[in-house]
Image 1 (cartoon, rainbow, N blue to C red):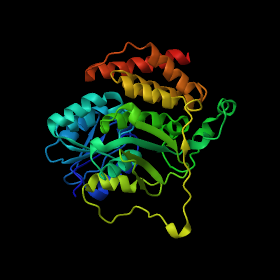
Image 2 (image 1 turned 90 degrees about the horizontal axis):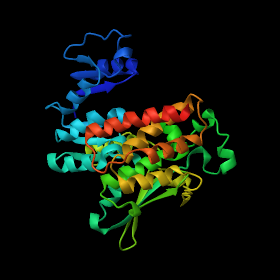
Image 3 (image 1 turned 90 degrees about the vertical axis):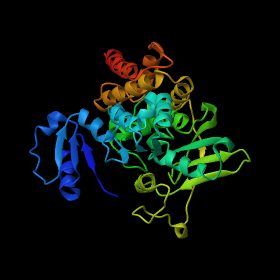
Length: 354
C-alpha cells in the first residue's frame, strides 16, 4: 500500500509533519488563507498545493486506486463525487455525500464501476453483517446509537443544555461538530439517510436502537429472523482498516474486546419524541431529492450557531425543521442544484437566528 496524496484543511502542522514522514507525491491544503501562514518545506518528489480544485484533481489522479474520503461535512462533496465519477474505490467516511446526493451518487457508481466501502463504524458493521446473507434476504438493519450525553434527559432538562455539556461524549472522541450531532442524534438521522442509499434499503427497513456501551456497532436482521451483529471497542481503527484492505482481514492496531473481564450490553428503542432529529432523518430518507442537501446545510449552520452560543441546544433541530419545511423541493436535482440549495439553507438559518 503506497500513499500517493494527503489533504488537510486547518491542521497544517500535522499535514506538514505527515508529508515529511510519508513523502506522498501530492499534498493539498484546502484552506488557502491558513496555508498562507505557513512556509511549506521543500521535499524531493512532494508537490504542495492549496485550494479546493486540487482536491478534485487528486481524487481523480490516474495513479490513485483508493480514495479515503474523510472530509467533514458538505466540504467533502466535490472531491468524493469526482472519485466516484473516475471509478475509484472510495472508502467513505464523509456521510454527507450520500445525505446530499445519495440517489445520484449510487447511480453514478453503478455506471463508472466505482466501489463504495463504508468507514462509518455503523455502516461498516452493516456491511460486514450483510455478508452473512444476500441483499434480498435482509429484513431490516438496526443502527446503534450511544444516545450521547443526554439519553436520560427529559424535555425540560434538554432546554438548558450548555455547549460544554454537549461536547462531553460518554464513549467516543470526536470533533466538535460531530459530537454535537451525537448529542442531538442528528448524526444518527444522517446515518439513516446514508444507509438508505448505500445499501439500497427502504426507510421502513431501518431502525435505531440506543446502545450506551457502543460495542455493538450495528445489526442486520434477515428474513429467517436471524440477527447478525458486528462488535468491537468504540475505536475507528478497525472500520478504517477494513475499508482499505477489503476483502482481506489482516492483523492491525485495532484494540480487542476482553471477554474475560465481562461485557455488559444494553439496548433500548430510540425515543423519537426526545430526539426529533431522528424523525427528520426518516422523512428525508423517504423523500430524497433536495431535502438531504437542505437538512445537512441547515444542521451544519445551526450547530455552528449553537457552538457560538447564538441559539439553544433544542433550537438546532427546530431550525432545521423550519428551513426544511419551507424549501422548494425538487425530486431529481443536479449537482449544481444541490450546491445552490446548500447555500440557500445556510442563508435561511442565518435569517432564522436573526
